[in-house]
Amino acid sequence: MQEGIRINKYLSAAGVCSRREADRLLDAGAVRIAGRAASAGDRVMPGEQVFVRGKLIVPEEKRILLAVNKPKGIVCTAEKREKNNIVDYLDYPVRIYPVGRLDKDSEGLLLMTNEGDLVNKIMRAGNYHEKEYIVTVNKPVTDSFLRGLAGGVPILDTMTRKCKVERIGKRSFRMILTQGLNRQVRRMCEYFDYRVVNLKRVRIMNIRLGDLETGQYREITGEELRTLEKLLKNSSSETVLWKKENDRGETYGPVRTDRRIKKEN
Image 1 (tube, rainbow, N blue to C red):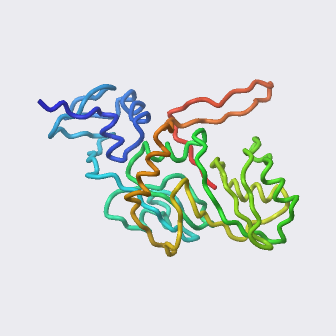
Image 2 (cartoon, rainbow, N blue to C red):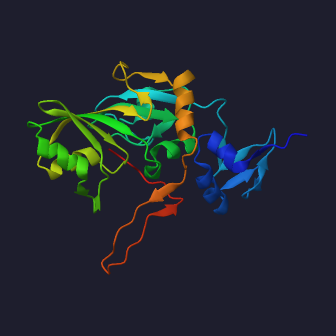
Image 3 (cartoon, rainbow, N blue to C red):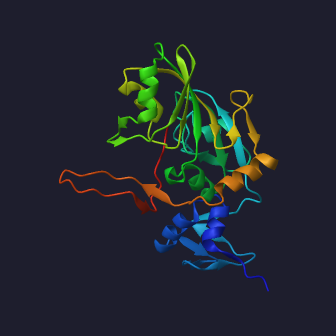
């Protein structure tokens, strides 16, 4: 007798959301299995159809994970109202979406997938996964500037984590971050009165951009995928909302949340 698949796993495998977010949809009564309202713990049996807010959900046959060399001008969103969205730009035959964000004026490595849990495991700041950038600025890079970046910078009402920084040219440097704050690299540079001229992401964890041409993509498979899976083995897929001190001096956060947070570098 086939026991089917748990509904939260089914939705995650279909690329709808993470399992944790699936539980939120179930609690809200937004999921139906074979015409009946679904609840946490329910299983989808072979041949049964699943709907989320009236839309039929069909799991993908296999997990898709792509390395994309995003050009400048393309927006990391699946929102169809954005004419330059990355999903339409790639026109991939299976529904996929970006892992995190890379702002419109930046270029380089972007991962895209159809698996919700994978997104959270890679991008969750609490997992401390590395992202590497090559940055060109508008004036000569000084030792004091690099030390300032490496030591942490006050932006967005928080202090950035210490990071690795290395000069690679008169006006360029390499930076390795374990955070994903909104426009983090640009804001860090602006704090020291530097303006980013070019920002290119070249690595996410063990996945490297390499010689992938601008606008092209490749599937992540084989040893590269196996290494990534090992690195993610003990990573949490829970999203985390970092909060700050309020006007009364009360501190709150970090806290766990089911609400997806947009992140952007």
